[in-house]
Image 1 (cartoon, rainbow, N blue to C red):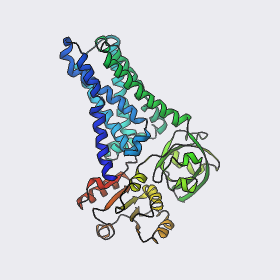
Image 2: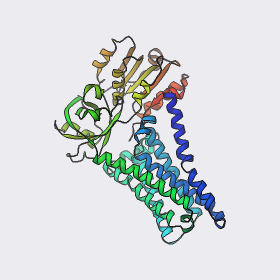
Image 3: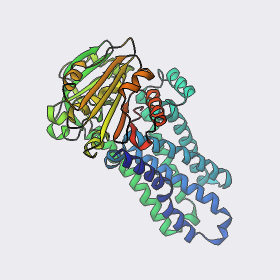
Length: 427
């Protein structure tokens, strides 16, 4: 399954960047009057930009079928990079093809809004990027006290305004509008993108699964465990190892959904557990919540459970967890007791190792081994406890710096990239 994930991820890139714009390019080329032949390159740049803008909007709607194939973090990477490509092509289109009047106004406003939103999002909402570029991370930490998550979400939604202005920009051009097949496709693409986002917004804010806060427990000085009850139908939509978005509609400052990993096996246990570190206003207020508080809970997102479930009988797994990132791996170790699992878990020297009682129980299984400690494993320790082989799959969960370090180390030991997986849980 890990091998399939990388292949499918690359195929989706191909579809988004080339396959989706292709029908627009073909119908435009077939219908464009020869007198505008000198403008073909500039016009096509605009077509690519608009199709990628719509693709970014569609991906932001978190389609369930795609999430279960590649995972939401990878989907967000495609979303972000596609938006960057759209900005570049939009700018080139603007420089090469001048217009006037309302056509120029809608185009300029669309480009300016979209560039502004993308630039803002790359700092405040693209964890996959800020975790890799130190200067962006420093800027984010410096400004995030002012630009709260809720505000960032509203700013990000200005993408819809930019896309609507771009749509009007296209339809206001007479010689473009006269190409009927192209115009029909533009309308169809726009309806699909906006329809998907509308469906997402409805499910996120109006058609949410309602639950109750059953228990709040401190498992460490800065880590809070929540137990949430909800309907059986909602529990069936959350897999072990997933993450889900929760919000508290009656609590000030906690009404915007935030994502957290699932600790347990919801359908088996009859409730949802999350273990959450206090790093922001939302998470630091969790210990103050009262039992019985109403909670809105989305479906689960993720691919970890299906990856293990679909693996071959002879495939083995190495789970590598760091800090609070260990949470989704705990549920996987609990659920897949029929799989050969080696579990490596570390926390900082001043932190507490969580849920050690679970490891003590699992270590009684003949197919389970665990190594837990404060501080990083030394090279010598890893040589002894980290199994290497073609039959092993490696799932890493922790800070992005740790994920990348382990990926590099495993590659140096001869492990192929399609045997290594981690979710960039940075949004």
